Structures are given as structure tokens and as C-alpha cells.
Amino acid sequence: MDTVFIRELAVDTVIGVYGWERTVRQTLLLDLEMAWDNRPAAAGDELARALDYAAVAERITRFAAGSEFQLIETLAEQVAALVRAEFAVPWLRLRVCKPGAVAAARDVGVLIERGERG
Image (cartoon, rainbow, N blue to C red; front, side, top):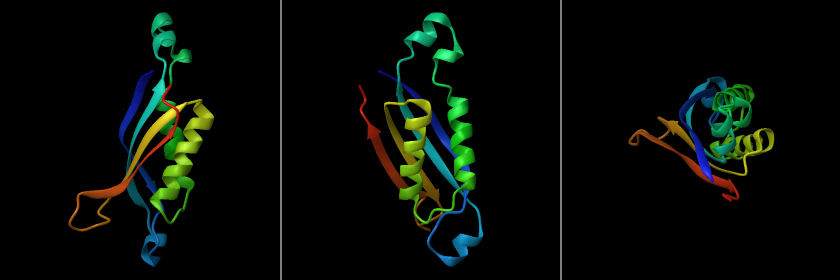
């Protein structure tokens, strides 16, 4: 199985448990690896047979913009479920980073894998 990836997708959302976090939008960075068989798309040079990473990125961005989760864990689970369901992705690895959440660290976050790699 091949991998289609998106790195450092910046999404703005309301995220956090503190009162001040509920009143501002913060930028999260997402890295996404998705299992996909690229051979059919490559054989015919057809976007319709490829995993359209631009469409995936746009859908995640819209979803995050409309969400107001407290935990990045919840956002990660919801994004993973959305991508798997709407784009028929059998397996994915998703990293959600929250830059600035810990002053002494570049970023913090979660890394999840869902589905079967195949």
C-alpha cells in the first residue's frame, strides 16, 4: 500500500480547556499520512482515481474551522473518522500539534493511527 501525505496543514480553530482559549482561535498543525493504492491513478494519469489531497486538506480545514473542542485528542479522533469515512481511506496516521501550549517546547500534541494498513 502506498502513502499519500499532507504535512503541516495549518488550521485555525477554537481549542482548549481554559476560559481564555474559548474566546480565541488558535492555529494547530496537522501531519497526515494516508494509505492509498496509487497504481490505478498512475496507470491512467487520472485525478479521479487518486486520493485528492487538496480536497482532503480543504475538508479538514473547514471541519476544524467550525469545531470548538476542548481537547486536541477529540479533534484528532473526529478528523481521523471524517477522513476515513468521506475519502474511503483504510488507514491513516495523524499528528495534531499545538504550538505554544507549553512555553519550553516547540509544540505538543497527539499522534494517532486508525484503520488497517493493508
